[in-house]
Image (cartoon, rainbow, N blue to C red; front, side, top):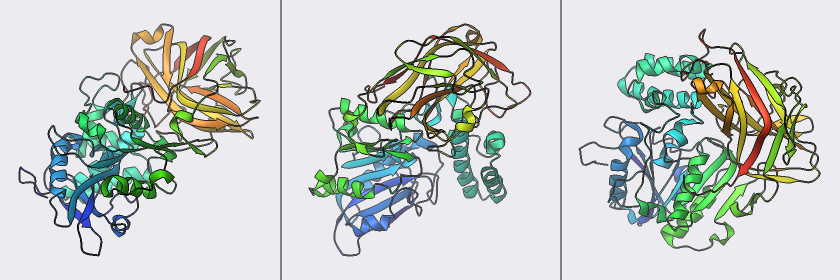
Length: 514
């Protein structure tokens, strides 16, 4: 595909075997067009067998495409060219849909003003804000995920540069698991101008310097299928896109499954085919697919977004001071009957590991009974439930907390205790840096949105720690933003939690555009 500046973008085409002109599905990605995102989607040949031409394009500077790769910043200009070009192909009928997840989810949304629009689009697991939807949360960089992805992009840069030794160094670091410690140095050496390293050089606690993309408003009024996962780091970005679409007067389709970024438990190609059949071919029959459906993490059942969450939405915290020693001592109480104080000591020599959830390299539901048993993890647990309870919303914890150092992290996990095992449902982190950390004041921790039914007899648990390595880099307590593994400058940090007015609440899943 020729670009106006003369750069050629390599594009692979699959099309039906019988002659004719077909609606075309376009995917633009940086990982190699032959892969075609088959880690989550059916092969393009399947879509071709259903009557579509499929074009998978290496974005500028990736795969076999010419030019220099500059990340998301390059895609608005090239995306509009690709849409116009796709409509001119001799086997295309002029109707174009776009699909893809992660990078190729956002690449669908990035169009220059005045660019042609897709006739329908299906962005999955992506958001518009590079700080809040791609690189950080709670003022802390996504350390393991961010480094891993940046190194994957850097390896492709080394392949194109003809440097196999550098490619192998990056690959070994990812394979043997040493990249959380040595990945930053590898990026600085082999991809100093890369998007991933650029994010790590920005302050995740402030919006200055970060890019928030603003697609043409008309794009949000196009038919759209949004896909997210409860264990995916980009879920908040998907919910933001849903709110943006509704604010524009549209009614997007939405699917949120019990999925991680790469594991979609059977995929959604049948639904996606029906969506494109409706909007690119005028075919009916979509009544078998409701417009919005979300999976319950507990029951596994699908339901409408508006049907979720009619139960309790507020709990207080109580402890006699032993919630970090005895995992069953801290109480999570309906109403406002909590109270007490608690001291939690974080030793950087043995930081609490992050596990599973939406930021884990092992993303998804995990057992964390052994983590809850640690003396540097404070647990607050309900009594066994008398009846089933559906949790639905964005969990937030408000409490008064301070530290004896100039920085600390608060890492939370919401779990269900089932037959003696604590199964993690949702996690979150918030980072504080500076002298204000020593002052007792009210602070907020936000956790990953969820919908999950807890059965009668089961218990709900909130666990709190001061680290989640390597999901986030360990806070050194010096007031400086951590960029790397634990070192000799890291300090022991003591947290003081005042529980008299501490509350865990569930905010609505869809509060409107942020």
